[in-house]
Image (cartoon, rainbow, N blue to C red):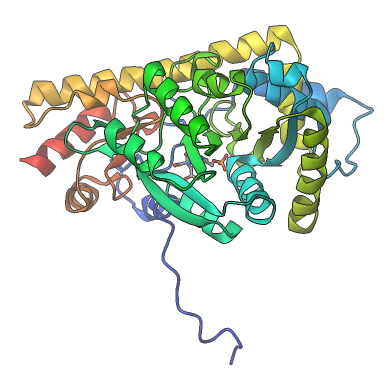
Length: 401
Ligand SMILES: Cc1ncc(COP(=O)(O)O)c(CN[C@@](C)(CC(=O)O)C(=O)O)c1O
């Protein structure tokens, strides 16, 4: 007998469980469009050349040891991460108002931020977009925050429900926390325009709503690191405070290294120092201190201008391949005369297309065509290749006719 005998089998994760099902499928024509992990034209995971070079340099460095990092992580990595997202010329960085702690990728950064806010911020409510990344509500609920939604996506236009967004944020209690996707909104691929971001910023500052940015795709949406950070930099430029979770999983291909950072932009340098001391109280009992290898790769690349440039070229190549998959899928559906308007496939940006297919159609496509995608109709464009686009187009065509 077991003391755990009463436990019931838990369901698979809605996103990562798709890969579990995909791996079990023996079909030679199966395609995994679930998890947002980049694949090459050959359908293989990609280790960036610049990452391999950085790792070789680290291995060849005889003085490299495996000591504990400080609770806040690799200091050089933290500084470089803040510069990457806020900009080298950021006034907040010049004024020492930014504290950055290395965390376990994007998820870990969101969780440490959530735990910090639940214990040390006066408002316990966080507003997250509807829809949003499936893990967001769980991360913040388990952090101890109360999760509410703000309207974000309009199924009718397959675009932003900007009116609903402004109404919901206008009626949020003063000081509420608001989760914002910095770029490449997951799962919809729909981002506010710069003008809309400015209206969101003004509204939020007028009600002292606390921005919590999640940047998991910087450089992946437009191919430009700076362009994809514009929304964040507008908020920092007004001198206000915010939280920022960064992930290097996608834009540097460091998925399994779990490399990320949480930055908090504070009103003054001495507040930033105190905030960092409190973040250490959150991290120490959670995992004590973060891994060494991943941030060492990132720091090696970010601090060397030649390697940084090589990274931007490889990053743009990934972004461009995803954009070409959008065009190819759109063209394939057009050539089949598939009923419906599919222009959102080329209008949306980032890793995902929010197709508008319902869960029955998704289930049909899995059964009959071995297409694996999340039940909300999201497909990871990075999982497609020129070879598999026709198969996906056939499946969508069959699902909607
Ligand atoms: C908006 C957003 N934030 C944070 C993360 C966390 O990434 P990290 O912890 O690996 O850095 C993801 C990853 N979302 C993926 C790509 C993978 C996943 O679900 O974990 C997705 O398929 O949506 C994300 O899409």
